[in-house]
Image (cartoon, rainbow, N blue to C red; front, side, top):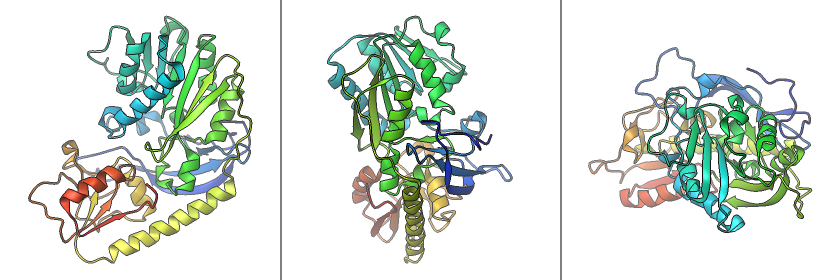
Length: 391
């Protein structure tokens, strides 16, 4: 469904179109064979608010399209998850110094990586995620309750046996169509002394580092410091503090809010302007064209390394189906033999019989450049190339 003529989801301001993405592919989907005629691309656009710097997609696809059976994202399968959930737990420990919570409520708990850790420091933990619509998770702690649904459909009075005093949302709020409405509901259902710990991909970093490949259909919203602060203060929350995890998603912003009044405030942060967004995106597209032309002109075989869920977005901005690759290598053997609906290359597990000594390897999992660099030292290709210049 289109969200034309709507206002900014963070502050209610007007929106300007900053990027057009015609025939933009779905991401996070792996298939044995692409299905001829199946619709895996949809027109999209990015809108932006000049007032608070928030960006959001123009068109929201139906959940069954975005999160169907073939949607592959699972927290436990990501190489970033363990360190990022530890980062959040350490942040909570530093902020709350051993506090035992009465009820921790996680919105978008996925496959429970973070919630299992939090179960050790709370009387009760509750999680909501549509991942569990068809079945309940196995071997969960006795103090854990899971609801398989979208948060929009949850009646908090029915779900919550006790008002939560810690609400967690890590890389989830950007998926919610009307985040202010839903977090207003959560705010009302929370205990009077509740805290909110919110983590989002930082749009300010995305723009500065030219990582526009991070725009995709599932992320409806792109929060920076200014817009996240504005949304939560508007619903009545009070700023406590914030930090950055520079090693997650190219830079993730973590902000803590309280339901109770705090002494500290953070009133003004200069947001990215629409003009800056447009200029940086134009520079990104120029760089992507130049990179593709350079790789296509290099002699010898070329491989990609890293069968990332976001690879179709990368291919889109390269204006290529990546057919100049022999294939894409990935150390996750579960992906071997698969391909993507819109990128006609096969995923391979590297083995001892594969020699890369005369090949160029392009790192195609852009949020895993550092560990892949280490891996490629063992495989010893002739050349290593990466699209992103900041990692």
